[in-house]
Each structure stands twice: as structure tokens, then as C-alpha cells.
Image 1 (tube, rainbow, N blue to C red):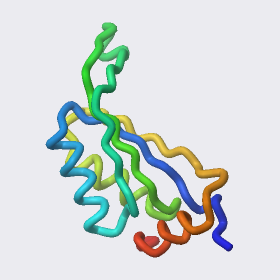
Image 2 (tube, one colour; image 1 turned 90 degrees about the vertical axis):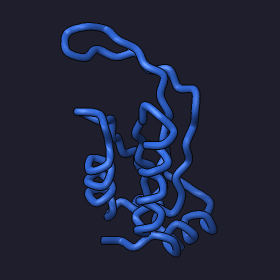
Image 3 (cartoon, one colour; image 1 turned 120 degrees about the vertical axis):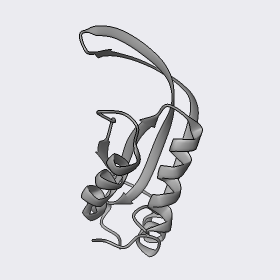
Length: 110
């Protein structure tokens, strides 16, 4: 049985679809993520350089194993255009066993 504590979903946002797809492709091709989903139409409100701002963005959801976090973070940072990209990991506390096994089969833990 797969231990759900070893899985996580990492989130980032991108200013355009091209960048979101570049990040998604790099992570899947390099077996750092089993699946990456791109959600369009996100409107973000945030404080940046002392003022409140907003932006239309793409939300990128990355399914991977916890051991790959640092490599995923480094890949995102190497490709991202933001000075400080959002990179947040959320632990998976439960999941369908067959899906978690699929994540194992499609990632390489570093």
C-alpha cells in the first residue's frame, strides 16, 4: 500500500499559457511530476513592492512525490519570469491507492 504522506501537490502561477506549458512539459518530461494541470482564468490580488496589485494568471497544479520538491522548485525557478514566483507545496493526506501508485510509476524520486 502506498504511503500518502510521501505525495504532494505543488502550486505555482504563471502570467501566460506559454510559460505554464513550458514548466509543465519540463516537469513531466524529466519525471519530476506524474501530472501537471493548468487552470486558466485565475485572478490574483497581492501586495508587491509596497502597493496592492492584481493580475490574470494561470494556476499550475503539480502532482509529485515529496522527495522531488527541491528539484521541482529549482526547475520552476529556472524557467519562471517572476522575480519571486509562487511555489507552495501541499501534502497529500489521502488519495486513491491506484492513483498514488500511478504517481510512483511516473516519477523518479531524487
